[in-house]
Image (cartoon, rainbow over all chains, first blue to last red; front, side, top):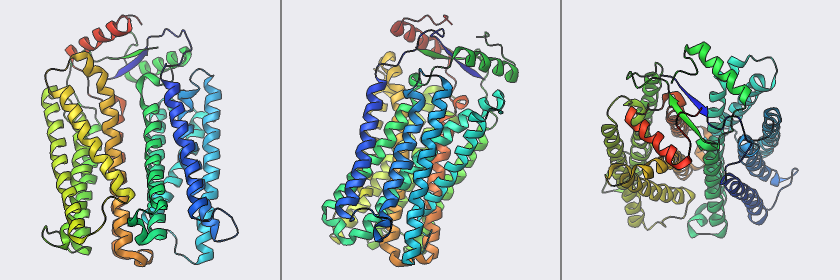
Length: 258
Length: 258
């Protein structure tokens, strides 16, 4: 019942699928528009951002969109974009982008808890906050597990092979949950701030709705690039050979037995 | 650069991966709990459901959770669960589940528009409604495209092969967007109905938050079963041969050239 994917390129050329750069460029355009529009929303309608005032809250959505949406999404795309670089370089870049995302998200988290404390607001009662804490904990665990298995030199190859599909699935899931949590937060902010004016198609409401759709589109674009089978990173010759040996050892199939 | 997945089973046995039934059972438990909990929320805290009164609104969340979350999710799993049945039977079941989902969602849609009309509320101003309309239109288009390509007998095999990965990607994306839209709707209902009581950890708020997490978990469980590479439906011998011929014709590779 086992199946194995064999690459037909014969380990030869380093090339990039023709359409990939356009899709990546489109995703980056979406991502940057997303960040710019979040800034525009906070600047135009929410008074801008400052740490030592009521505007501290506004650091929360901006940090979360930059860290847990844009940078996290881009970290997932690293293996597609730098498909012909050395695996180790790509890995380090993937890990680094996730560190940046984590640190920026942490600043965003501190901003909202600090703001709540100063204002005397209750913490962690809403669905947005429950999803947010879940995302943050999963993201931290995923980063630590990823580091231990793939960057720390001690992990045996067999363990890496076994963990890799789980890492990819949970990575995509945590990213999608981040996008969903951002949508919940945006919705919460709109209902708190606009109230009845939301249903009068106030410019802020329309802008924020478009921002929400862009968030969903960015999530979809990253997912598309990530899951397209023929855009996956070609495995290097030696990795492939090791992987085949591993399959042979664990499943008793001979790599040549089709 | 092309790669092709060869099954090692030699077209022999019809078998099911050992862990698959447990994961499917878990997803169904989650899905049924989801529907029951939506009913409990509406029954206990929102006065129940009736068509000819203010309770008409409550038909909306129940129909959407049953149709666009539970049934749509199950329709995606059909090819994993009935992996050893004839392809045609599985296809018809997949299409039928999606028809049920579509009809139930349509009732849910009529419920909310009818309720808004009677109450004189504005339509389609919120992010939830924008996402909802997007989901519904995409779902309808996907159903029509799926029917034309895969159930209607006229579509040539080459076109089916080309469209299949797009159908799978958009199917999963529409399902995830449905789950996200449900979360937005739940959040909207909570903020409208509970207001300040939400932050006092009222039982309704806690129940609805748990319902939200269950929605996200059901989405994650369906995605996991759907994307696990070794759980994909084994292609039948004759389909595989045709698929290989098609690959050979379009990409100039010989199926035997590893």
